[in-house]
Amino acid sequence: MRLFLPITTILIALALLIPGVTQPVLSMEGKIDKSKLAEAGIEMLADEGNQNTRNMLMMISSMLGLDKLEGEISAYQKTRSIWGTVNELADNKNYLVAILVAFFSMVTPTIKLLLQLLYCVLKETSFKHNLGKVIIGLSKWSMVDVFVIALIVAYMAGNANANSEDLLNMHAEFGTGFWYFTGYCLFAIAASSFIKPVVRTS
Image (tube, rainbow, N blue to C red):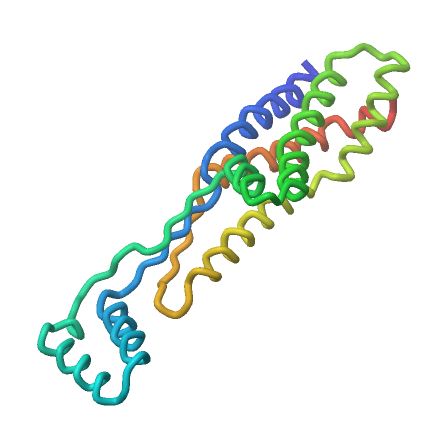
């Protein structure tokens, strides 16, 4: 009964980790105001001509009502999970970053939780004592997974800004994967706090 709480917490953390890395973490959408788009198009065309060309284009735009267009059109849209970000980084030949993100956000957390689960069910032996030392070592990296999420958010925001110029109105929204991953982090921290005292006294 003493181990029920830590084991349950570990299992919940594992269950949350899976959708946390596979479900969308962040969605970003950029919309352009139609009237601003028409104005930008005219400016680009006018740059190729003289003042007479600019005046002619402005007059035609006004006659056609392009300066009074209403509404927005979607020009940029991206939704990524942690796993999707790893694949995108690999596709862009950023292999080292892709490996690091995958290692710290998927491999390390999974190994750590499984080792904690194994520790809970083992009887007191020298192997369990050594396993406890390994878990304590892994715990030093406990905030790296949170840092990975921050990097992904910054990465996507950076990509959006690179495409935004002045016309795009950007809107970002956290996806379900972000909340699953946040839940995993909280339960993983709780699991570590439950078994740490046992590890230290082994």
